[in-house]
Amino acid sequence: MGLAARSIIGGNKGVRSLRSVMAQRADELSDDQLMKRLDGPEVESALSALYDRYSRTVFGMGLKLLGGDRSSAEEVVQEVFVKVWRASHTFDPSRGSFSTWLYRVTRNVALDLHRKRTSRIRPVPDGDLHIAAARDSSASPEKVVDDSWLAWRISRALEGLGETQREVIELAYFQGLSQREISRRTGVPLGTIKTRTSSAMKRLRRGLAGEDALREDRQ
Amino acid sequence: MMMKCAEVHPNLAAFALGGLDSEEETEVRRHLALCPSCREKLAEFEEVSQALEAAPPLADPPPYLKDEILSYVRAEKLPSSTNEELPSSRDSRSKNLPLFVPGVAAAALVAVVALGIFFGLHTESPVATIQLTPVEKENYWGVAELHPQPSGNQQVELKLNNLDEPGPDSYYEAWFSSGEEYIGAGTFTVTDSGQTDVVLTAPPQVRNYPTFLITEQSATGDTAPSKKVVLRGEAP
Image (cartoon, rainbow over all chains, first blue to last red):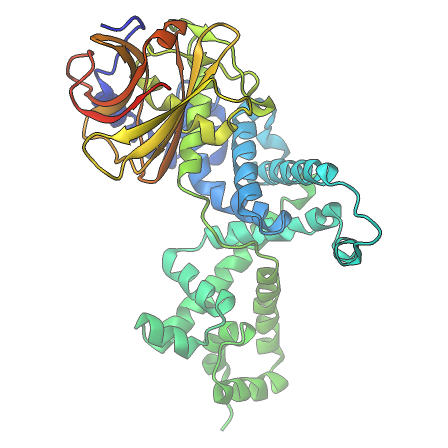
């Protein structure tokens, strides 16, 4: 028998079942309620639910703010959700929505990461005109980050769409397909595609307006 | 004949996105030129279309990220009443992260998974690298690197490839052995085929146990090393 203490694994199945039930309940809670639970025994299910709701937006923002670097964007996601957990006590729902608070956290993490990365880069020798020119032409991280509030809002609005609505927007806007092409690709009648597109755009507008109303809280 | 408002409305969103056929687009344009009400509605859709230009890439983070974050939180939340708490040698991002030897309850099982990926492995040269070869499944392979810690414990960094998820109610366990004597180095699981990085901690005595094994253990069975050895290696 080994010298080290043995793990007690019995009851693992029970733990899984319990976790599953807790996750199901967490899904039904508001962001504010989940934030309160980060201080308690249900921290994992609460953080898991917040992750499910926001990780795509945070990851997308990481990609946008850090030049499409997936590795850096993953680091942003990690840092952001650990900060959400660690700093949950600093979130005050009376001062703004969780989404707005999380936007600030994401923006700051991405900016910090960008600064750290930049500080590690040695000055470009004068002779390397190509690299120097490329760096000079790029927007400052602060400028990119300032433009990011709209990106956050539209991302959240997109996340609020149903599956079929998101599909038509992705195909129409991000893939540039015409309504007729979307109809052919999906096998859905053209009239239905137009209705879905219209509904999706209206919903996006409402989503943007919802985040806009909180804009004054973001600073 | 010009389109009526009721015919134009279903096309305005698509118009704003540039998704109408040229004939439809021309018809809508003709109507818009004479209809302030529809132009007003179009402006709302165009506002959304412009916002979409700012949208970040629509991409899912890799599936393992969530587990890594929850594992980290779980590890930090574990009560200090576990058997042994060891000093961390990880990088600055996890300088307060406690490590635990086996002995915690089931909730800790997954805590060790992928910490290596999340926190980055330290850069000190390992004191020994053990090549791990498969016992049954030929596509399993990996290495175990041993890093001595100031406390005398050995940090065991596993880089495993192609391990399947263990069977129901099962988990993997790392062992050092010498003859018939075994020292457990920790338990872990994998959730995905591909590369799995795991960081475990073993007591100082493992230096005298030259054989390294990874077994698949049943959660409901004996805690002694099972006969289901999946990887094996010998310390150089």
